[in-house]
Length: 108
Image 1: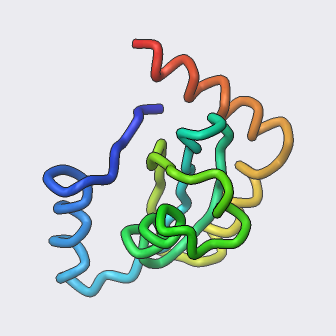
Image 2: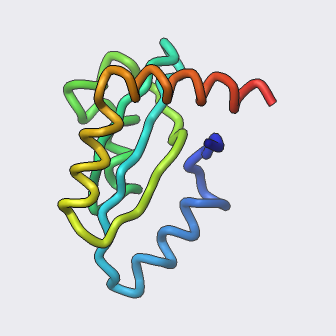
C-alpha cells in the first residue's frame, strides 16, 4: 500500500482531469491522521471534495484528528461494491492490518 499525498501536481490533477469524462465512480479511501497516526475509512463519489472536507474540519467524526494524508484509495463503478469494501476495511481486524501496512509503507 503506497502513501499518497493529495496535493496539486500529482493525483489531484489526475482526478480533476478524470472528472471531465463524466464517468461516475465510488471511491473507498483511507485517511491517516498526521496528528495521532490513526486511520479513517470512508467512501465518496467525489474524493477531492471529501478529502478537503476532512482537512477543513467539516466532518464531525474527524475534526479533532486533522490534518490528514490520503494514504490509499480504490475506485468502484457500483455503490454496493464500494460500501461492502468500506465495511470490510472498517472491521476491527482489517483496521489493525491497515495500520500495520501503513506504518511499514512509510518506513521505506
